[in-house]
Image (cartoon, rainbow, N blue to C red):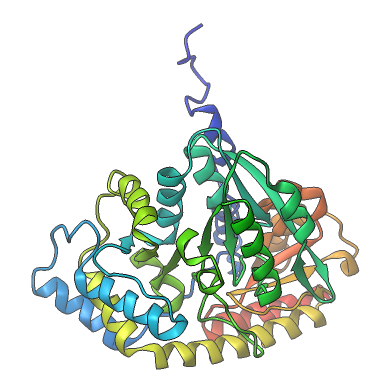
Length: 393
C-alpha cells in the first residue's frame, strides 16, 4: 500500500508524537478567550536598550550576511571570558565555543553529533519537551530518571538515575535551573550525577539557560566545574532568558574540542549559521550588561513572590520556585484532579492560560495535579493575571 494514502500523515513515526505542542494549543486558547497568557515562558518586554542599539548599528553597518560558521569572534570571546570569570572554566573561543540558533538547536546538535542511533540518553522527568524530540531525531532511545516531591519543592531521585543507566547509555541531559519545576539542583545532587557520569564514562549535556535567574539565596552550580566533569560535559546557554530576547535565537555551546567537533558537525547542516547582527549585540551585553541582568533577577524575584501569593490565595498548593521563569502549583485543593483538562478550561473560565506539567513527562499520571505558570511578564500583565486568578475563590 502506498505511504501517501490521502488523509494520512506522512510524518515519520519517530516524530509523530511531536507533531503539535501544548504551547501552541494554550496560546490559541488564550487568544480565543482574550486570556492573560501565563503559560508560555517568554517576556513581554525588551532587554537592555544599549544592547538593542548595538544590534541596530550592526544592521546599519552591513553585518547582514553569513557570519563565521562558529559564530562571530567577539561573541565567542565574550562567552569564553564570561565562563572563566563566573565559573573558573577555561574554553578556547576558537575551538571550544560555538554559537547556535538558540539553546534548542544547541541541544539537538549535541545529541545528533554525539549520540549514535540506538544508544540511550537519560532525561530527568519532568523535562523540557525539545529533549525528547532531539533524541527521536537522532534515532536514539530515551530513558528517564525523575524528580520527586521534597517538602514544598523537588529533589533528584538519585536511585532512579542510577537505575536508568544501562550499558547502552551514552548521555545524561541535566537542566538546572529547571523547566518546568523551577528547581535549582543543589550541589549534592549534582555531585551524585557527576559520580555516576564518571563511573559509567558518560557524556553530560547541561542546559543552563536560566543560569542567572536564581532566587532566595540559591546558587547555580555548573556541572562542568565538578571533579572529572569538564572533559565530558557539553554546556548550553543562551541570550534569550538572560537578556530577554527570546526572538533573537542566539545561544551557544561550550565544550572540549573533541566534543564540540561533534556538535559542530551536526549544527552546520541544520542552520549553518546563527543571525549575524544579533551576535555582536549579545557580545556587548555579556561584556557590559550583567548589572542589568542582576536587576532583572531581582525584579523576577518580586514577580515570583507576587504570583506565588496570588496562587495560594486562589486556593492552589504552591510549590517553591528556586529559579527560572516559573511557579508550579497543585490543583488538588481546588477539587481538581486533571491538570490538562483544568488548563484547557482555564482561559474561558477566568481568562488565564497556564500549562499542565504532565506534558513534560513520560508518566503523566504521576504529574497530573501540577500546573506551571510563568511570571516573566510586565507588571501590568502580571497584575491582570493575578486579579483573574482571585476569581477562583
